[in-house]
Amino acid sequence: MRILEVKNLSIQFGGLRAVDDFNLSLGKDELVAIIGPNGAGKTTIFNMLTGIYRPTSGSIELEGESLVGLKPYQFAQRGISRTFQNIRLFSNASVIDNVKMAATMHSKDNLVSSLLRTRTMVKHERELDEKVMSLLEPLNLADKADLLAKNLPYGDQRRLELARALMTDPKILLLDEPVAGMITTEIEEMAELVVRIRKDFELSIILIEHHMNFVMPIADRVKVIDFGKTISEGTPDVVQKDPKVIEAYLGGGYQNANA
Amino acid sequence: MKTTNAKTMHPLLRKFGPLLGCIVFYVVIMLLRKADIINGYYMQVMLFAGVNVLMTASLNLVNGFTGQFCIGHAGFMSLGAYGAAVITTMVFKSNSIPEAAQIPVFLLGLLCGGIVAAIVGALIGIPSLKLKGDYLAIVTLAFGEIVRALLRLIQPIGGARGMIGIPNYANFFWIMLFVVLTLWLLRNLIYSSYGRAFIAIRDNEIAADAMGINTTKYKIMSFCIAAFIAGVAGGLYAHVLSFIQPDSFGFVKSADYLVYLYAGGSGSLTGSVVGAVLLTILPEVLRFLATWRLVLYAIILIAVMLYRSEGLIGGKEVPFLRIKRSSLYEQPLFGRKKNGLSEE
Ligand SMILES: Nc1ncnc2c1ncn2[C@@H]1O[C@H](COP(=O)(O)OP(=O)(O)OP(=O)(O)O)[C@@H](O)[C@H]1O
Ligand SMILES: [Mg+2]
Image (cartoon, rainbow over all chains, first blue to last red; front, side):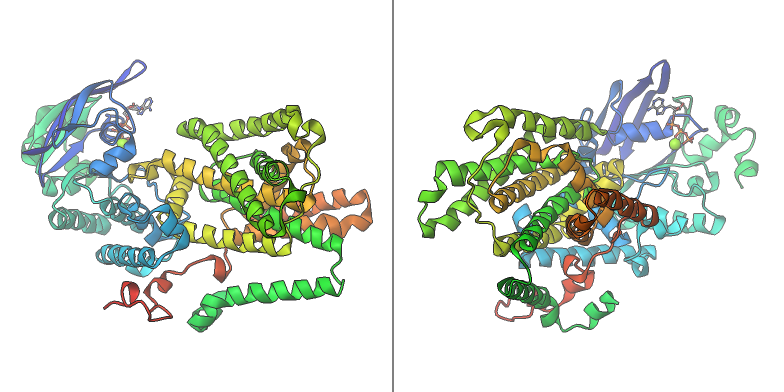
């Protein structure tokens, strides 16, 4: 069974049709990449898949349940989590608190037990703390747990966003340009990390990225968007050779342009 | 310095030190009062300082921790003041309350004052916090003035002249009890999933939403809790002064609390205590300067904001008002309950 079915998703901003008839049928554990030039509408697709924008038309179904019209937090509670292209951390909170904040919806403590800080509440807090630390460990963030998020170097901030998204316990993870602004070695690390997360957490992933050499080896399928329209899709090999893609996006050989 | 102390301190001392400190502080103040070193006037200033700590700390929950902007906090204070005073003075006729029933009636009054403020908080918070943006500021500004105008019109509670003859139940003991209790509860709240949700909303509302936090619900919750505390503080205020009138809770009062909050340091409970206490006492200390005192007060404030724009305390907390992560892993002090933490 497909976990996510997106049909004819479109959104209109004034005269601009930023996304036009986007379709996606995402399988369980599948990794689909969305590529396309700047302003193509990739982030807008994510914003619709997380409830930040309400599509003008089209449907989003997660395991058979329609999500259109729900609030962003409800998308997250049903299992769609994301990272942001322009990092959006809780900058004045510590690294560990950033991740704990993403567990708010799973909290078992009510207002009274929190106000009184009961034994059970402390026990839950400790369990959460241990869980978050075990998540930070493989991301190389454990020894920075008590630093403020805003004081982290850029690469750490990207990985923290990933940890935070995982903490919501998602079924589908949306990664918006996870290696933007990273150097080559960091990009390779991130590719390994995404592959490992996908396996360990049994996640379906949708990934937006400009770096071809990042996307191509890890994606099962690629969708190419230009001016809001899907112009090509298929396995990485097929898409790379599609003349429409080369013309619209790759401009005569991505390897030279993005190596 | 303080943090290293807290680390090496005996857990027993660290847990009960603050409580012990409070008791010692209380006893010392009472002795000084007995010896008349603290006269009645100084005492009243201290009581107002306590009320102002409650007001500032609750405002901090909304403005400092949840990142919303309430600028009519005195409105909730007036609702609580009138609510409590109506209970103790009109429903129960203060001079005919038997001695033994005075305290329960007083506490009932405070509770009612808090509840009235919280309900009104929900009524204005729900519509304005559902919207994104700074609607809360405008709505609370209007709310403060509307409450004042309405209270002036209601004759049975004295209209514009106000209410007199409110019993002065709120002595140093009660004020201090409520301050300590409130700070303890607020600290617990901030170091819980609720507090983290508030801070997440403050730091990045879009991300908080995307991480499954029902931002509207938590904003309303924070706002109503703050309104409740402000209501209780208003009730205490009424029972310190014995006299309240609508015009004491105008915009100027709300602005005072904003000044206490930002001068002390928003987002820090310690800052609220320091800001409220210092700035309540400062004008009294400067009283010998007669009319010049307000000028100097303003200059001091400007200096603080220029040289410490994050407030006097700026994001720090004294050990009692913060909870370190490591304390989650401590064994309980008393082994009587063998479930919970002492397992494994
Ligand atoms: N809220 C909005 N109102 C109006 N126009 C918008 C809005 N959001 C996005 N757009 C427009 O929609 C188009 C697609 O933007 P989008 O951010 O999705 O591009 P993108 O593919 O993510 O590009 P990039 O690679 O630069 O991140 C752009 O022309 C953008 O200006
Ligand atoms: Mg984008």
